[in-house]
Length: 114
Image (cartoon, rainbow, N blue to C red; front, side):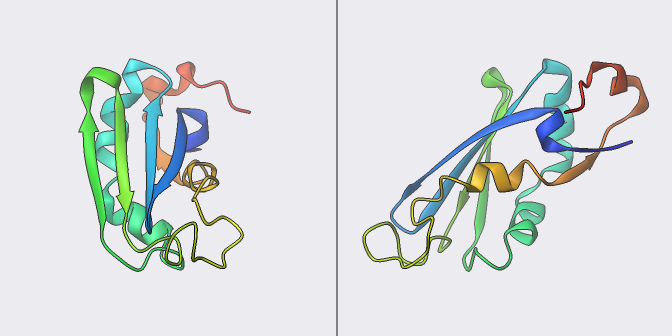
């Protein structure tokens, strides 16, 4: 069963210079291993291919059941010099939540689709 990350996680994003920082937090503990398995730095890089021109780093935060992504060279130079409408990357979290993942059938009953 394919679901959007929105259905199994929530996210926050911001910036530090020209780097976008996205936190992805599992809505339930059962979803965290799925996030670790399927939401790789490579997939996030591909998802933001037109915006992110540098590497993507991923950090696991198991105590928070979360992942943190750093998207380098993703903000057109950063807040004070960028001509982008979202120079601080505040909408990047919403964009990431549009990514789809495969949800195993045994977890389907835990999802409340929007």
